[in-house]
Image (tube, rainbow, N blue to C red; front, side, top):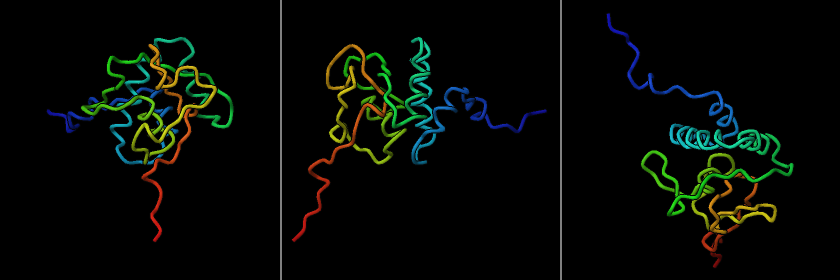
Length: 144
């Protein structure tokens, strides 16, 4: 007797940590991609004592000061999630704060961030509350 469960569902197990972090996700497009991005992040953060707790604290208390949550910087600075490459701080700011974020030009690190993406350190902060969104020149409407 064959099971009627599609093979894809056998691989769709989501860890409790990923489910918790996805609870703060903004927007609902690209659900599977966001899940993969968060799953990848959880695997990296579990290797660092206190990193998961710090990220959850930042996401659950957006107005409160929080520490940097870092991952190792890759050679080209980008992170690959499911055949798409992107800058890690942009990816996680898109998941948890601004689903319509298009580029790193729209983000500026806050003073409190010790490992901003632009500092070219070995670690990069992906705490979405260590960045603020800025308007890019293309955001202004032309009024005639």
